[in-house]
Length: 256
Length: 273
Figure 1 (cartoon, chains in turn green, red):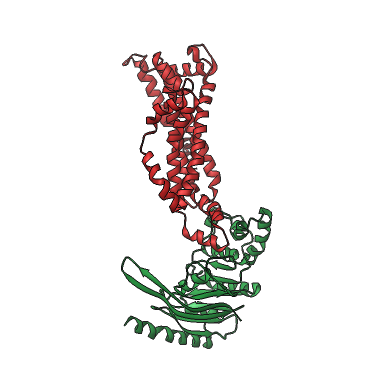
Figure 2 (cartoon, rainbow over the protein chains, first blue to last red):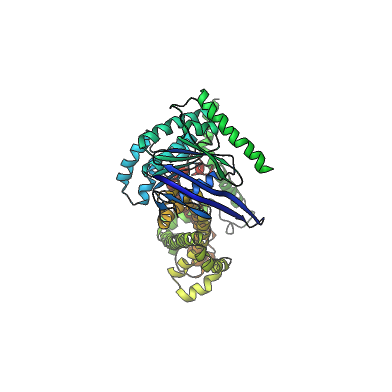
């Protein structure tokens, strides 16, 4: 039984200024089971973020349905934790208040928020930075706060929209290791949007390769590689070669 | 000569250089006899009048002698009352206008039509509505400080980062919670800059109101001593108003610095607080 079901979803944007209709997603169907780590991989404009936003409830399909845990998604909710491209932390709140923001929305007491935040702050390795403000932390640390904020809600699903896009290579690799550890520890289900082939192969149990204009799923690949994944191994590069071959002809054909 | 020592010394006196030079120039000019001394009293004479106004030293200010504290208390009370009402209403209405298109369409055109009317032009109506006492002054202070607070609040709400609201909705926040815990704190820096503009208008209008519609306060003393040709008291009143305006602005800046602690180090603006 799938946790997330995307059933024949299309999303059409009407550009009223240019009188154009842009099909961002065309008849996409995909299922994600509990505990899976799905990477949505594709070039810019393939609708991968649109798809994620529809699971999050920020956007609605033009046709088709998105269900999480049997419920059709119509609006954002705390059952789906989102980690954004930019951390989107409240700059006026210290780290622990940001992590416990969900509890604030539910009206929990300060003592309860402070206590519950601590576990997740430690889980993402930010012990000692509880009272720092986001502006005092690096980009990578802010993303950890964003991850802790999503984890604290104990959501059914964690949705991540290129969360490490702005980080340098070294920090990104560290964060990948951490994320896999957290994913295992919290036994969560993750949908992760990226345009990096290496990133998707380093993280996912599955990689959905998408094509652009209109956005479609080219292929859903189960990734059978041992962890920790070695990006220099032959098997890793076989996958990479295959994904590249999926991405390349498509772009030529579509633009022709 | 150690440069660090002289630099430290300079840092200490930096902010006093211009006022001291101005005062010295003024004193010299007044004593030079170019103008009749009654028209531009020297700072020393102003100080004598001021001292008597505050402490009853030699009774030279006659009926004002020793009444300074009650005079500034009267003016400050009016400023505070009008400013408080303007802050509460300005922030409240500004939040609604910024947040809801419906409220904006309903009341913003009206408010924007009232806004260009100079607050002092309300004086006749203020007097016939409220008589000669505190109320017309408070009303004028309100008229002068409401719009800066309103506009800066609207601006603060409208420039709130949409992504923060997404993050808030993702954590399960209802619109009311988002308004209170995201939109309001996000608008605070803008609200505070509105408050600082508003406190300036507030003092301006208290003094104006006291000149025409009230029989107490620093503005009243200023205008009354003008009739008695006591320009030393006029100047002492002006300086008192300047001082009180400076102190109330400083108080707002201080509170802003505490409340907006999170901005420290991330913005240029935060350094001045």
